[in-house]
Length: 302
Image (tube, rainbow, N blue to C red; front, side, top):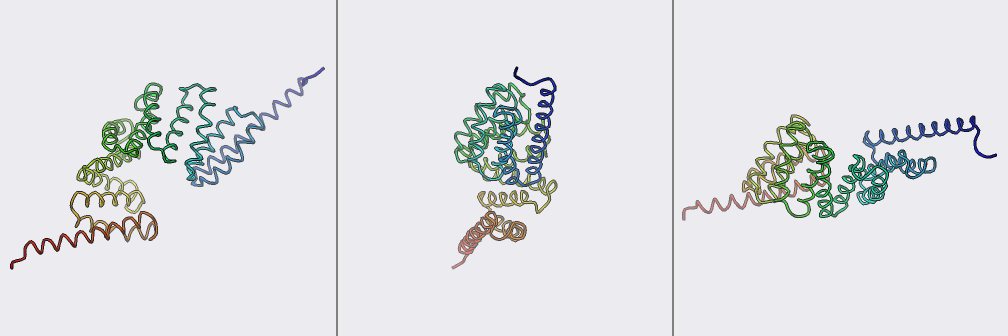
């Protein structure tokens, strides 16, 4: 006679329940580590958790798949875009088979795969993946669901990164009012969409439009984030950049002259954004000097 007795089955069920509770607690701890700002720590915890879940419950158990998704998420957040892309690529067919192609978790995995495909350097592939995903999100989740809005935003982002800023601008023109209605005019995702719209407008040839949009966004950042938040400083930097590109080199020079010492203090003198602003300041200083010399010569009386 083989098999477990009733008491043995109950004991085995209890052991499995305890094991699942312990692994779920490890999952929650790893997720909290990442959300507290330690992406590398969360990645390492999930890297240890995935094989534990696989041995205990099998590679396709929901707890194992959740741990795999956590590993991919925090691998990407820790800076390894290629690793995250590959992990999401391995997870996607499993979720499609178990949950279905249009389950929300499957759609989230597709979005993450597309995002990290772009971050890993293939903007055109990311654009194409989001272009296929967006109508599915609209049909399954609704046109103003936050995941649908995120897919629209990423489609525009990677369209611009793939070399078509005019198309990206037009996509963002359609997205911004949706974000304003569904979220709030000053919600982070709405403001980010407006910033990308400003950038794409400039890249598409409308430097004055980009300047004006960044000028409107700066007081929003200052009020919500504070005047010395890195994102506020980035908006100031973009405002100066497009001010200069729109032809006002003197104003661009003055804005950068005020910004550079703040960047040096907040981000450090060797931070890439500080160095870029300092280089631009030197460039606009030369251009302003040349313009001043030209005006003097133009008004000289011989």
